[in-house]
Image (cartoon, rainbow, N blue to C red; front, side, top):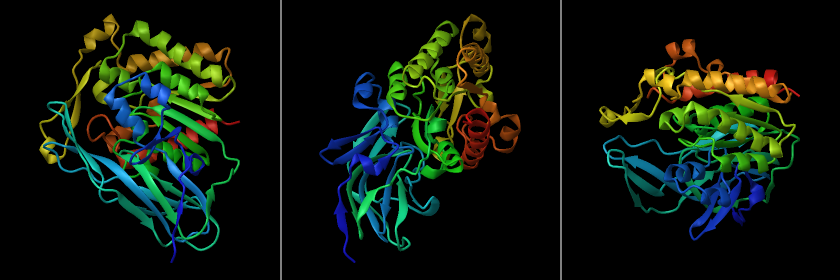
Length: 385
């Protein structure tokens, strides 16, 4: 067996908006450099550089594909080790394997003090060595919740970019739930599940802790080619207690106006938050509860007072009502604009069966359920045609 090194170029990647050369390799980004420069927030920097929805997309007869990578993991002081991120193999649209990468860097994070300590590690190799013979479509989905630097790609046959299959491109923006928090693998996040069922190409701009109606995010969506766009708005605004009702409505209008500047006739779906009982009527901010961290359990607790809603603080109930009102008003002049109540993806009955493990994020089974429902509700009902 002879493996040939294949240059990693932009056209071999799907779901990334930029490929940054560094002295250690190529870093896929989900926000362009100009947008990253406008916000030095370390939470956003970590989230957008975690390649949720990003995959190598190849056409090849190779039976062996190897990828040298430098992953960046997180380790939390006082907590059990997190599972290593998965690399998922998809061949001709079907799951064909999953593995992890050895080595890598580690951020040691102390959530009680907010300190970060980076420990450097070696490059590791991800190998898939039992691919079927003959020409085929091969995708390697990168971990959705770890940083990944691409170092080298090798195969035992020529590799070309995956050809255009005439699929629509779906661009989605949301919070950590859309990013894939608590999903076990990159093809198991609810947007990836929905995209596979609907037969669309995913661009996932779900940023953990960072769906905050930022103007640079709206401009990024505006400038990114897409056939279908959805924006899931609300939970992070409440978590951070970022704005009041007076600011929220105009900010939503401005966000949608900017998207419409680049996508005037593109189906655009506004999605409100899924059910989160802790913050339905209680405004933020929310804070982590570390009391059971050593057992691997972390909860998020709202610190606001429901009485503060009367003075303009945002709860999830307030946000849903305001989003529904805004979309109804805009839809009079915008026939391509739709609204989906997030509780249709995860509501009261779902919570009784599949409660949120940390009172905020859905687990792997809930991600699948949400993806199945979004594929049916959004693509078949709201965004058809």
